[in-house]
Amino acid sequence: MRRVAAGKGRRGRVARWAGEKSEWEGFERWDFLVAGKMVTVVRPKRAAKGKPWIWRAQFWAHEPGVDIALLGRGFHLVFLDSGNTFGCPAAMVEWEELYGMLVKKHGFSRRPALEGLSRGGLFVYGWAARHPEAVSCIYADNAVCDFKSWPGPKGKAGGSAADWKELQRVYGFKTEAAALAYRENPIDALRRLARAKIPVMHVCGDADETVPYEENSAVLKVRYQKMGGSYCEIMKPGMKHHPHGLVDPAPIVEFILRETINGER
Image (cartoon, rainbow, N blue to C red; front, side, top):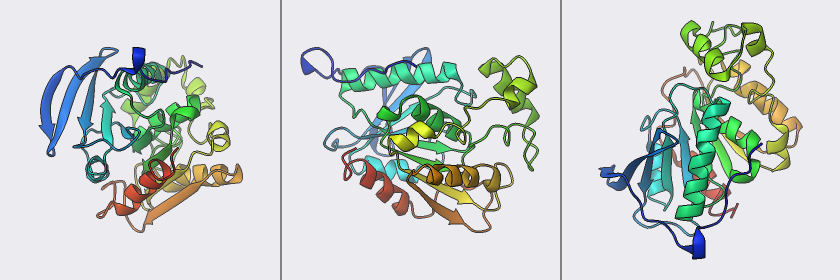
């Protein structure tokens, strides 16, 4: 397991931003390459103390209510376009490189809040399992917590054949049996998160037809709570996989603020 960089650059200097500058939702946006992948950083008007940030995994700008609200509260917003790689080990190496740059060169908090929508759950829990010291909290939304359920074929929804094939390729599984035997899915890799006391919030539709609740968040909930982990849940009765988020994102925003700025994690 790689150690991720922490602290500022030499003599405590904070680097200037480079890349392509534009605007997003009234905030300053920068786009640049890290590890050969496109990164987007959106800056608040005024950064909150300690430079807190939210790290979105997958689906840039989809249902961005939480992101916009946090920008207004002084958070930076970060997105790394890892493509359709399902939080595989190679994607985590890219995350490590970006994390090191943001913390060491730009003075970002060592404990970002993680945001995982749908398959983004594989990224945020993959990162947290590897680097629990580099997480303040997790917000997961109709999240994939077991890839056997989706995109794999073992859940009641049937999965996605094309995505399942791609997942096996990017993870380097030689056979489907090897993929099905994998024991580092989010539902399996919770012990280090519980020990680190990482709080998590899941927003779920109980009629999710793509990533079934009972095969994903429900399993994670039971296991994490048995380990003493802090888990809270907002259930959307009768709601399917879409739309993500909440009409009023305030409960999610308040959770993240409580566990970062207010909680000083």
